[in-house]
Amino acid sequence: MSALVRSRRTVLKAAVKFAGFAAASRMLPAGSAAAQAPAQSAGASKKTEEKGSALILLGTQGGPGVTLTRSQTAQALVIGDRQYLIDCGYGTVRALVQAGLGFNSIANVFMTHLHNDHTSDLAALLSLKWTSGRAAETNVHGPFGTAAMVRGAIQFCNADTEIRIVNEGRTVKPESLFHGKDLDVSGITEVFRDERVVVKAVQNTHFPERALKRMPHRSLAYRFEMADRSIVFSGDTAYCSGLVELARNADLFVCETIGVPQREMMEQVAKDIAENRESIARHVIETHSTTEDVGRMASEAKVKAVVLNHIVGGPGPEGTLESFESSLVDSVRKVFSGPVTVGRDQMQL
Image (tube, rainbow, N blue to C red):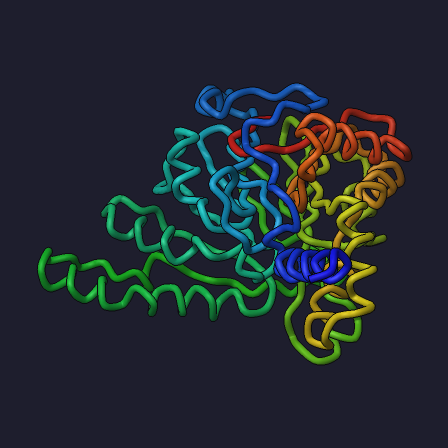
C-alpha cells in the first residue's frame, strides 16, 4: 500500500471521528495547566459567601466522544446556597459529586441545545435525584424539545420507578418533581428570575438558516446576572452578533472553541468524502467558533475575561499540551486583550 493511500485513509478516519466530535487527535486532559486567569479548586465552591457566586466547569470536552480525561459539557453555577446547572453531558453526575456539590439541591437546569453531548446525563441526574428520596423539585429549561426530553427521561426510568414504588413503598412519582419548559426566545429574552439571579437568552448560530427552515429545534446562549458579576455561556455557536449583544460588558464569557488547525483539516476533507460525511464536516466547519471568532466576539462585546470551553482537538503526536493550550490563548489574543483561560474539568472561577 502506498504512503499516499495510507495517508489518505488516516485522514479520512480522523475526519469521521472529528466530524462526530470524538476528535481527530488526543483530547486535552483535565489536568492541563495553561490557565491564563485565576482559578481555584472546586472544593472551594462550598465557601461562597451568601451572595457570592462560583462557577465550576464540570465537563470541558467538545462533542459526543467519550474519553478518560474529560467529561462532556456541563457547568455548575453556585450562588450562595443555590446551584444552577448549565448543560448535562455525559459524566455530569459524577463530576458534581467529585466537586463536592452533589445533585439533590439542583432546582434549575438550563440546556443550551439538545445535542447528546449536552444532554446525555439528564436521565441519570433525574433518576438518581428521585431515588435519593431527598430531591428538590427540578425545572429543566431549554429550547423546543426540552419538555418532551424530560418526559422521555422519566419514561426511560419507568421500570425502575415502578419496581421501587412496589418494593419500597414510595409515593412520590418523578413526574410530580421534574418539569421541562420549552423557552420561547426572540431577540434577547428574560427566561428566568429568582432572588439570586436573572437569566437571559438569545438564539445563537449553531444551527444554520437552511436547517432552521426544516426543523423547530433551536440553540441558545445564556447570560446569568448576579449581585457580584455576570457570566455568559455561549453554547455551541459560530460567530453570532446576537451573542455579542448578550455578552455586552459581561464579567466572564464562557465560549466554545474549535482549534484552527482542526477546522482547516475538516475544510480540506469535506471536499473529498461522501455526501453524508461531507454534511457532518460542513456542520463542524460552519457552526462552531474558532479561537479567533471567540476573540472577536469577546472584543466586540467588551467582556472582561474569556474562558474557553467545549474544546475540540488537542496536540498532535509531536505536540505538547502546553503548546496546544498556548496556541489557543495566543489565537484569542490576536483580537482580545483581556485574560484568557483554557477550561478544564473541575476548574472553579
